[in-house]
Image 1 (tube, one colour):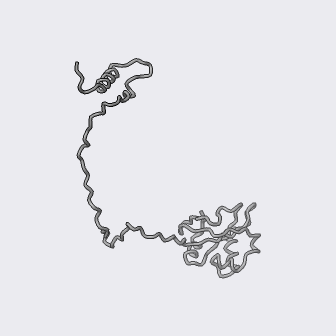
Image 2 (cartoon, rainbow, N blue to C red):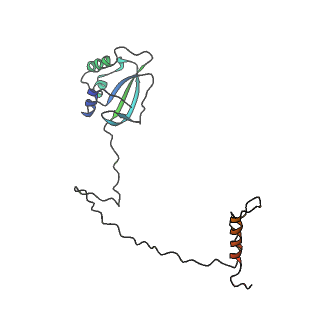
Image 3 (cartoon, helix red, strand yellow):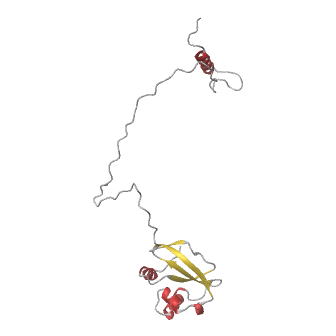
Length: 180
């Protein structure tokens, strides 16, 4: 996040400010990063340069920072940093605002929505859903299927419901036309 004072936010909006000068222990934003600034939203960090001190600032830095003269820039810096913070170094941060949003290709299925909110897209075709039950087929008797997995517990003991389940399975496996 890159914070700017309110009067500096107005300079960015006016297109006059494209950089800021900061004292940091180490950079907190990096080139290529998208940073958020309250009052502006997203901005892209283009470049972060460490400077030797105020003496390395030029009139171009003043103009890129939104000031007419180098003296105006130095006065603003002295207001924000009355004394150089110990252990801090001076950095120039160049940024781009507003971000140029990539233009997405229109979707082939997207349709414009007129000002009254009604869609101009043709209605979707109706799909008929069949609720007819599937035909049931008799189980094949040419091969024996394995018994249900829950029928036989691993210890060999069966509860009455398990016994009944196994009995039903055995009967189902017998040929249909058996004579008793």
